[in-house]
Length: 256
Figure 1 (cartoon, rainbow, N blue to C red):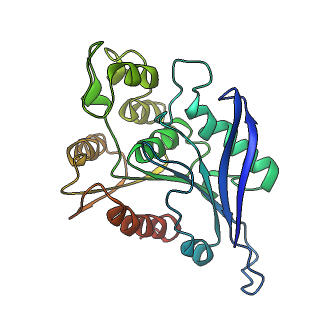
Figure 2 (figure 1 turned 90 degrees about the vertical axis):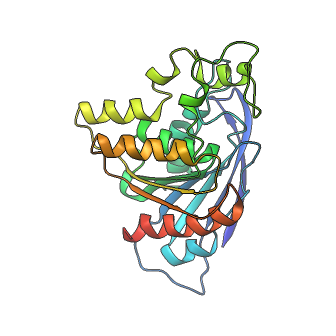
Figure 3 (figure 1 turned 180 degrees about the vertical axis):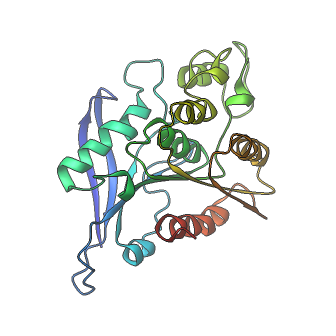
């Protein structure tokens, strides 16, 4: 197993940044001669690259893990220069990994997953770039668009204030109607009959984000957008994510 920390200059962020990468390469365990898949793994709010690494699964399915530093940017292109976190993950980093490591060449071997803020980022990024990501998994996804809509200057919700959400999502009066809303992206892709990525969602029944996850599940069902949805006892913590990242990766590689 090889573990890399790569520092490079990011045009999306207008500065140097880093990402971490795990590649199974143990010569004692020769693999079948087949292309290596790639999973882009996104951390949550206040987290960083490498927060959680299901490395024992990389050998099982022969895939690399790419872990970007999304900071607290919700994996969206923010208003400020140097805050293009959607472009960072969905375009820049994918191209870097392709050119440097010859990985993530096609959607069928390029996946994305995350938890909490990273769950939102995984679902949103896959819907924004369906020609890049074939499958996406969101665990306890922070699907907060409807919750922050119409928030006023000076307001907040105990997690962050208006200025933060405005920077990440733009105009909060129209946030539900724009591409920062995964529902809008999904309907746009369906309307033009563009292939949608396969989606997997899971959330704990005691998680404070359970209702937004159920809402997206119902939305996808109502519009006949294929997806896998699971909920079981659990809260917003690493115990739940550690259990379901295994299930999500099994689903990615076996369909089960």
